[in-house]
Image (tube, rainbow, N blue to C red; front, side, top):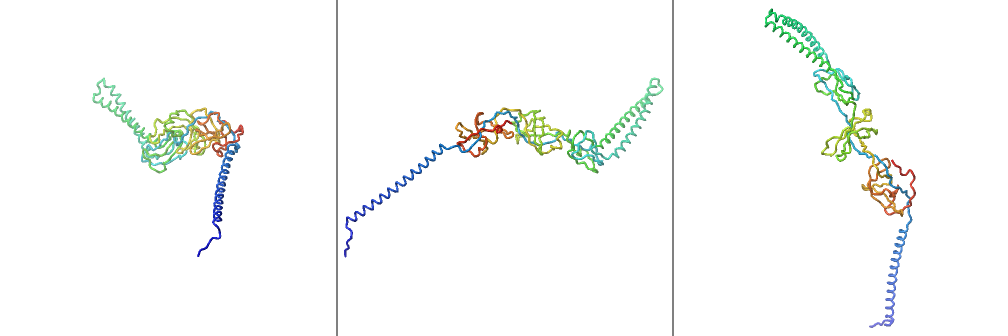
Length: 392
């Protein structure tokens, strides 16, 4: 059975053409929307660029220039504080007991002062025996000398034989020798008696004590240590490259462990350098008055040597930014646009920092607040107050 369409072929063609026209119109409208959107975005970007190019300064800063100053040139160093010379005091007599100890660590003593005593009973007895031996020898010498004088008188007369005369003269010489030997033994015992008193060899401060009452003294045994003259020295470690900058008489200032500032003076620069550290020692004499107060032997101290004065440029530390191991400042141009500039810095003194290189002496830089700036920012500039940048 065959069905026929209610629509004629002409109507079908008209419907198809209409659908195609509507599809083309839809595609054209979508294309125009995308084009308009792109143009709008480009317009926004262009407007933003125009705004950026003509943006007004957003921060207000103070401008300063590096100041020419005359600064002391210093060389920093570290080192230990030690005794200038430390004397070891021991017993000079053996097998006798210590009966008295008169000083302790930290005591100031004078040359010849008795520090300890050793038992001297046996020495006194030996000394008395030596004195008696000397007296006996003197008596025998007197008798032998009288006999010798008579022998010399009778030598020419022939009343005495030559042998007898020689015996008298020999006895005289022997008696004299025995007297000298007895006197020598007496002096030895007197010396032993003096050695029972342990005395200070110099003025100074007792830095160590091992002497105890009742112990047996032995030759060479250490009883005390003495800082001679109460003098201390700072043994500063300085690199081999800087040793040539120092010489005797150069002033030094070190910071004691308690924070006190102590002045000293270079006494000697070591002629050798440690091959491991490549550092040499510089010996600095320190004031005697500070011994035991601000300074103590064995402590560590930091200090600096004064090498004279030098003309240089400086900026406040607030104007210098330290980042990644480098120093930067923000330099201003004529349009007040900042440019981040790397500089080389030197020593610091107070709130000032030395500018070794990187900017000219007449360059304008941002005094503070550089941490809020970026390279290329425009800023408002106001005059810095008189106290904003002062010479040290």
